[in-house]
Length: 192
Image (cartoon, rainbow, N blue to C red; front, top):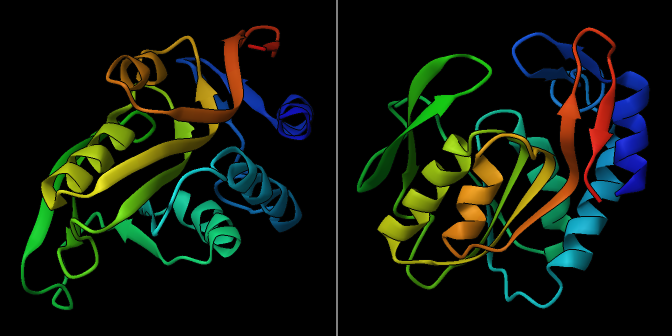
């Protein structure tokens, strides 16, 4: 998606350790006009899928998932990274390692909100090693629901996550795929 690539080129910051900072428009401060375009693009790409629910992970994926859900007219369910007193009954749980935060989270969803009847579109802001997406896949599989696809705003194509998901047979649609980044020069190359 050219609009997103241009925004990453203009405002993204490449850091050592394969870090791409896009916090001024994607995952700290949010550009809602851009998110409307991302949601519309996910709706276009998955128009053939009978989506009944959108699933994301706390916290950065929630905004993009919410706007995308407007186009499908379905609810958003987000996997929580912490148990709370409000979560009761049967829970689906898995472990997810965060590339950015360098820690492992227990993520959970209530079985009340994810059932075998659901057709799930997974939405997230970033895909690097694929841990978050694979964790969400695990939750959907625990529920016996159907995965209709995985929509990613920014994929780091030089890391293993996207390929691993595709190799497992999942439909992955990434709006911008970074082929390479150079922290020394700030150069970002996109896959087309």
